[in-house]
Amino acid sequence: MKCERIYLADDKSSWFDTYIHEQSKELLPGKKRPAVLVCPGGGYQYTSDREAEPMAIAFASMGYHAFVLRYGVDMNAVLPRPLKEAAAAVAYIKDNTDEWLVDENAVFLSGFSAGGHLAASLGVFWNDKEMLPEYADDQERIRPAGLILGYPVIDLKSTCTKLDIGIEGYPEYDQIGFGSWHPAIRGEDIFVRENNRTYVNFEVAMNAYMFGGYATDEQIEKYSLQKHVTKDSAPAFIWHGGEDGLIFPRNSMLFANALMENNVPCELHIFGSGGHGLGLANEVTSNYAWEDVPECRPWLELANTWIKSILRRQ
Image (cartoon, rainbow, N blue to C red; front, side, top):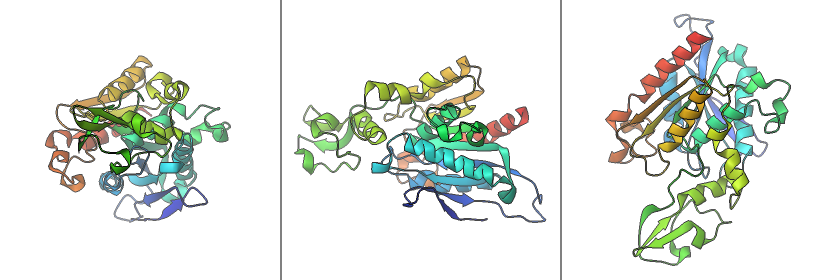
């Protein structure tokens, strides 16, 4: 396995890591493999380790070259910067298909939660000359072959607005240890006080990182991705835990419906169990018992089968 880090920004604030199968006379020497670029989640405030290397290794174990994108987060998350970084990573991979033996027509994006939003953004905006003018003369260079999306953010109005983080009473805002509080947002706009408990408006919290503060109606419209699907959008495999109370399953259903309405190949799985941020839904990516959900584990093999079906259509 060839593992290296390739920086996308001069200040080294964004990069991708490679998990490339090295050549062996025992393993189909000279064969170009499909590739999967993984975009971890983290609400655009950080990138989750649970949705990074474990995903890459899982895809690599099935024979794919794998890559993990660590896109701009926190104060570097303001869109479209992460979108441009995802495009740059895909372009870099396609520019090195001969060296790495990557099938240039089989570079897929896999994203989870906010990383799912990023992956899906490139899936719908890859041929938008205003959004990505750098590739206007060669849009195929950044076109994903398909998307594998886990519990993705799609509709910026389908996120929990009253998240219980276990705070009793009404403490002073500066006494609340909530790590995803953007400094441009007032406490009264991110915390909800009801019934002697303090909740978090996660919709406001996440969108703040995407837009550098308060989101406008125009920004919400622009990046609610189900509204921008066309016949040219990338095919998608989508899965979601049916008990997700943070990023509602409605996100996945809206995106799948938009794809189907535009005759874009799509496969959707809403599992009966499972909350948010499950990763592989097994002990490898589970810090808590509720993240180990046997009912959701089949998503990876289902995605593998779906990728192969997309490749057969080419």
